[in-house]
Image (cartoon, rainbow, N blue to C red; front, side, top):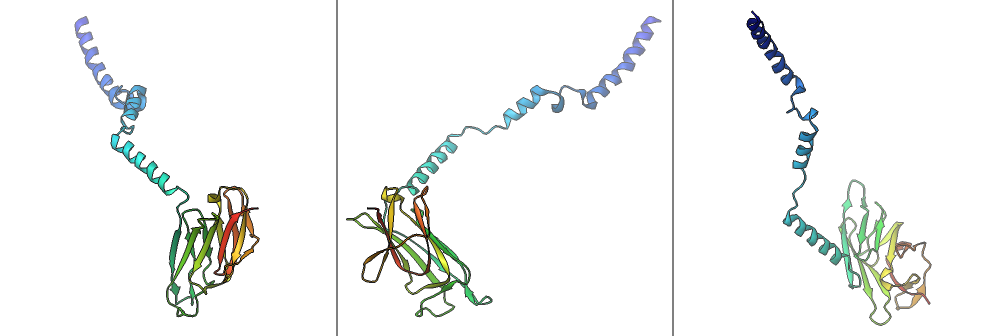
Length: 207
């Protein structure tokens, strides 16, 4: 009789054990087993690939090359589109490698008379370094461009290797006329001026 009772007891408890395994108490359930979770997380870590390391080295080399200073002349340009629906030219920004740039707003550009109104206008910005004096000379084109709303011009002088520099306006005869900047960014070593037409400017060591 006891044997029969034990038999029925064993048979009745097996479904309970199976049910517990299927209700999330099973040790194979990731949400209730920290060791399994850690192993799964570890399997998702990125592989230390030699190819990836090589790519990073190439990227660092490229950044270092692009950030090198002292290479002049530097030239950049941007083509400005005319929008017929607006009846005006779009704004634009020009950036030089040394950190200098200028920008003007939508509708502010008027091209020189020799460029028909409505044609595309290619704006250029150039920086040269005088071999004797070491000063930086900035020039722009095309000559004759004007800006109804003054364009913002930032001229970088960090390549001069000095904390103090003097800004000059260069007239058509090449004479240097000192020009006070509208703003100076001492941290980044650059000067800001607002211009209503293209001219030439030079930045030299301060005396």
